Image (cartoon, rainbow, N blue to C red):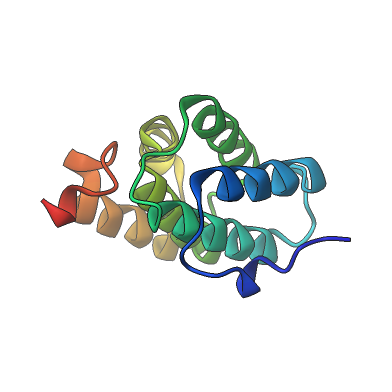
Length: 134
């Protein structure tokens, strides 16, 4: 039975959060039909990770980045907006660089605006999701 990630408590142990990321990554694939729901759930997990006040484990970070890069629809501002939130919350610097690299090729102004906003908000500190607390 799949977990409802929206119902998880904010305060969780790192190992618990990692377990749910593993579950998510085993259930979802980058060719998901409902990308909106997928990024909504992934943001829920990213927020739980952030609330541990520990940076995501490198091996898990790599898997989440690959999943997100493969999933993203660059012309969908909703997906791009959520992706940028996930990136900032987890410090996914490689995913951030990949999305920024795609920006010149985009046609959807809403998606471009989401990327520009993220660049201004956390572009210089993307690898440190806790930079705003320092």
